[in-house]
Length: 453
Ligand code: HEM
Image 1: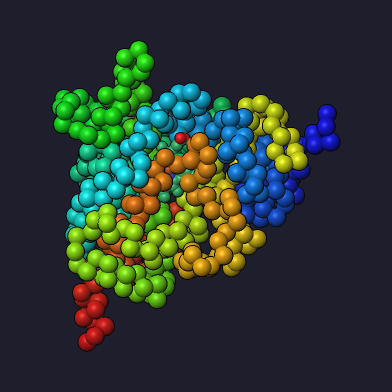
Image 2: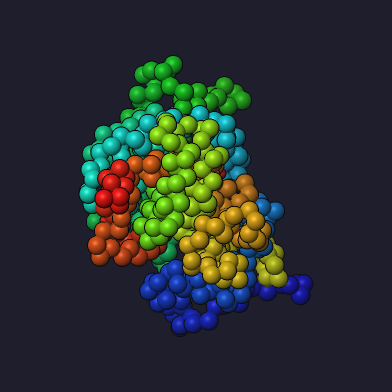
């Protein structure tokens, strides 16, 4: 035993038997935010379950980088195996490394700039469907859009509206189940043949069938595609063996899940903030009109869209889609001045980290200019919407590119105004999404005409 050999302190407010279940169920985000004041690393309990929450940016960084081999992905990702047990976001150890090496090139910066045209061609028809004065359910609109972008770019597939909706609903059902199961005090409940559990099995069946159809289509035309699905189909291990079908299915499904909802909620929150800040909207319109000037958007325009990028950065800060990222200690780990025994369930929250007043002045203010290079930047490890280390998001460049493109394309044609009475609240599901986000689309040429009349 060393002097450092002790467990993290238990957070205040714990009740007999139920532990911290009440504040956690009442408002998880507020509970986790308040927990940051309790220390760099603390324990909470939900009934018999104990979770260790890492708050300090330095310790989070240590866990994700230098000590990453001492942790597995933990509770949430265990439940996310509902999407497929071998998919990259949930795979561990050598299989993870091998798969990441195989797929990473498709997500490198140079490759991603080659996707700009497909991204633009996917977004434009969606916007072309909007009519001046339409009231949009912007969250769903952005979910469908982000899903179509991943499917078009990575799978060369763009299903029609009804099918796209069915896929979206299935992903959503599986996500909700994974989160519920991760937070359940008693794991047994998820195996009971309840209506809810049958619904989850059905949803994951619908999703796998949709993905299986895409794979079949690629197989029937082996030289017709150059995308992530063909990369997986063509892959051979050192013995020349192809990947088993179920692994390809898992991987494609996992990518669809990882890449759609996250980007969609960033876009939804970004337009929500623009609706509340006409000054920022005007700045965006000015940049888009100057840089694009009615020309077709290409990869060459992206570095010039500096304000657009600041808007995306600020949205990734204030509305980090991930609010719960888990790990599990696979051996005894020393973290800061505490000891985590093997098997300890750990979590950290990008959402609450990015809203900490100790790291960001006036943290709840949406201020894209805090990202101006001449302004003091947040301390190291304080801005990590994509995580860090060997499990850092593989789609980070893809997501930056996509959010910048969608923001610029929408802003070049449309103003999205908050619909009367709209007051979206943050809901912490698998991501933190707006409760309902109703916005009215105004065609920009009409808005300009109205303003000058
Ligand atoms: C704004 C959008 C996005 C955000 C905020 C985001 C966030 C994250 C985070 C925090 C992780 C790491 C989780 C952990 O450490 O346990 C992650 C992993 C991952 N993300 Fe993203 N993501 C986004 C978009 C995308 C996109 C567009 C794709 C692909 C098209 C993608 C694919 C992945 C994959 C494959 C992993 C697992 C990587 C690994 O474990 O090696 N993500 N993402």
